[in-house]
Image: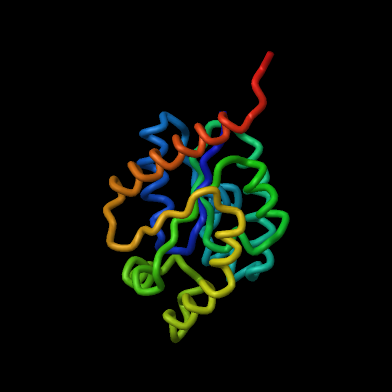
Length: 181
């Protein structure tokens, strides 16, 4: 068994879609940000305030490595999890990666009232999201097995598409693996 790992920017729907996907696949859903908060005994804005982004990224790396070594998870990752090369390697070793791609417009709409996103507590969230996307989009794409556009699409429809694409990926992998004698 392998994990299905969701990557993408904040507001792409990783947690919502991840929960639905886990239910369909009869797997355990985990959210790396929630795991970080549970281990730290504090929320992410507090970790950012006290330890800075570097401290948060260290905690994130430890949690990602631990989760990617498990089996049978649907894992929603934080938007910045792909920034470190060692995280990208852990994610790739951990299972099939689905990039939930969304526009900056959609991100702004979905995160407008969320105070739990330290990177958006600045004067110009649109510029922040645009700058983050410029850096992170190529990283998401570089590790993704599947890319799904999420804008203006209901979560259940996205889950159905992901399931179909995972089946196709599985059948392609089986077709290319050497036959057992």
